[in-house]
Length: 182
Image (tube, rainbow, N blue to C red; front, top):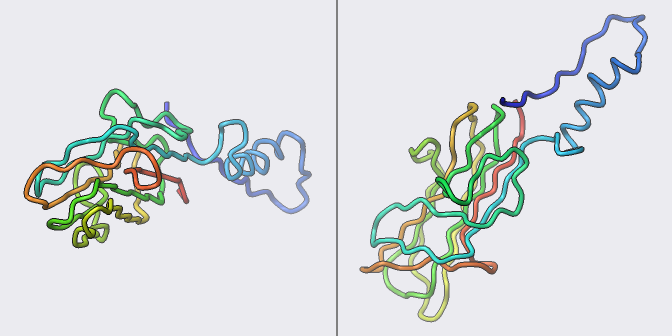
C-alpha cells in the first residue's frame, strides 16, 4: 500500500494542543521531513558496480545493481533493475549519471526518462574525452510523479562500436531520487 504525506492539522483558536494531536500532526510531519524511523520522505540512490555494454548510437537504460539506500523499496536489483518506481506521489529531485570507459571517438550523452519517455530538458551531450580518459556526464531535474510511475537514467555513445560503462568508483553510472513536495 502506498504511503501518504502527513498533513498538519488546522486547529481553531483556543483549542488545546494534546499529546495525540501533537503526535498525529506536528511530530508526524517532523518525522517525515527528517526521515525518522524509516518513515521519512522517500529517497533512493543506486549505482552500477558491473559494466554494461551500450550499443553504438542507441539510448540504453542503465542497470543499477548496487543500492546505496531505498527507503520505500521502489527498486529491485534483479527485476527491471534500471527502474525506480515511485511509491509516494509528489515532486522529486532526480539526478542521473553515466560513466563510460576511455574511448576518444564520437560523443557521449545522458538523459532521464519517466515511464519510458524522455524528460524534457534533461539531455546532456559532449564530445568524447581524450584518449586514455574515462567519461562521465550528469543531468538533473525536478519532475512530478504519480504512484507507479518509474524513473530511469539512460546513456548513449557514438564511438562506432559497442562501449562499456565504467563500473564502480567515482565515474560509475548512478540514479538518485528524492521526494521534494506533494
